[in-house]
Length: 404
Ligand code: MLT
Image (cartoon, rainbow, N blue to C red; front, side, top):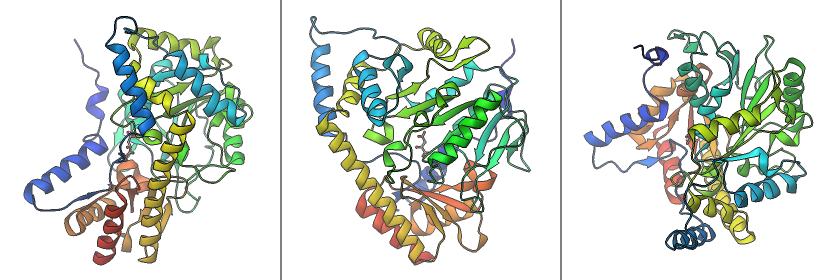
């Protein structure tokens, strides 16, 4: 018997678990501390009334023999796949059909599980800084080489630095990549990618046969009308991309759990349809997201539901604006927070990320996320989220300004 030795290579703990551990330790020492949590991107507003109503109705259906439902389709109930195809794609002129949409219990799980479809020899390119799930899940699958503690990088991954110098936009690598993770609006920098930038990625991937794994979890936060919400708005993307979507940040489902992975029928490699492979994987390893939850997600596409979830998004974006403007006025260099709930803040006087995180925790009682936790190019930054309460966010900015 041999365990998967790749787990032994993983450094420390998962970023947000480590933050939770440090915050719990501090709270244990200082139970009186009134902490404001702007660390993990977790929503705080309750579910929209239209979602609740749909879920209550679905609960009642589950209580009657005539309407009770057991196992649903592993790919998701048709009503939700159809609504998503119609409103998220076809309404934006994108020809995605329900059969290409797979409903799941989270974009995090899908991003982690998608590695099942690819051989271990593939070269994986990730942004730096990056959502740690892409890196860790490839490391667990033995596709990242070894972790080099000196550089903070995995020897087998191709890193694409996203720095102030390149406007936090990854450059297309010179070396050939097989799998490319892109996330726009970006977690953690809050940057977005315009049509031309995405077209260049799609052209690159089609030219060399690479696959883009596009995380669109934050698309609902886009405010600039010219910014694409989906990689499939880009001509040629259907032959080279897989997209992840989520109701977590869009509709407050972080605790409710519902998401989707979109794989076009045209995406074929080595004579195999990736859509069919994912279907096979899901049928074997997944029994579908709960019916009640999918009914709640469906309600976000009604006129009333859409209006309500967009009001919540506007609220979070106002918070992001409060952080962005407040910290800029205090003399810090900030970016993001316009088409994204995340604000990316340069630490003052070259202080390292974890030290600034600790200072903010201890002296301002504000929880943030240290940029270095997202990769070496995140060193010297912290991330704050707009997902807190409006008053708490204003207070957090005030507290940070006071200690600067
Ligand atoms: C984050 O804070 O980056 C996100 O909440 C993590 C996630 O969505 O899993």
